[in-house]
Length: 148
Image (tube, rainbow, N blue to C red):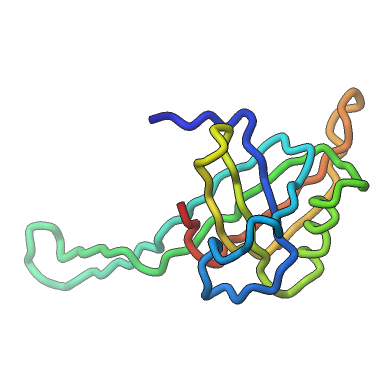
């Protein structure tokens, strides 16, 4: 099954929910939509590669590799800058905070979603070309795997 991204909506909650609780513990009424979304980036990560080289006569040269520590990737979001948007105001608040905030990406079908806690590590205004509107770009660093 394919999931169209067009029409998806990003939400943030202004709650101090311990990140050891699942993001589903955030009540539906607490979510605030982050308006003017243009691009969502990716949710995912990668494992470090741990290698070992041995001094022996093995046919593979005495090499072994295993997965190491999992490191989530930052999700870069791009928005049309709107200082009056309550969701964007919360994004700035999360940027200034030390704690992770709950996020929710609701796909166009209205039921499929991803929920996760993330630190807002970067935020900035993107000026781009002269014939474009000013944008807001933020990097969300997940602190746990997203819940589906």
